[in-house]
Length: 147
Image 1 (cartoon, helix red, strand yellow):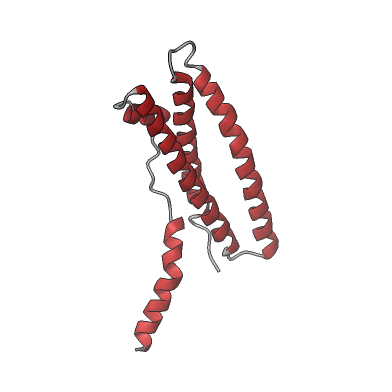
Image 2 (image 1 turned 30 degrees about the horizontal axis):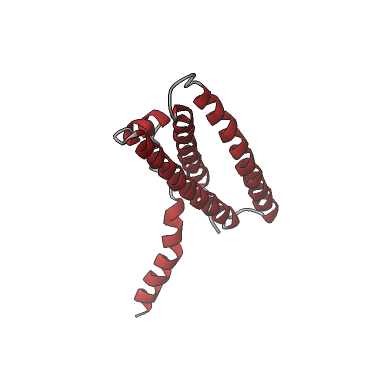
């Protein structure tokens, strides 16, 4: 009975850590997302890209939260844990600024294209960068030695 309890406790401790394990997410590029949603009409394509952005934002929020949890459980002195948590918060804010500027630039390359090309290019860029950022965060904290 004691062995079953030990195994159960082990799973209870390790299971939440699986969500921050080394990322194996394949990040689709903006062109891939654009092509994936391209099977729809122009309006359907835009709706598909809006959904991709929403899904990627949820994935990014989860990765950010998991990174904070991993840092808090890091087997390091408190001052380093606090410094890393603060640096992550700043990095998250700066990422939003970068994403906005980069996707504005990327979308501007649609030039005088007709219809919603500018907005659809921007949406594909946002989804791609969100997924890339989430993978970066997961990779960054995946090897932290925990308490």
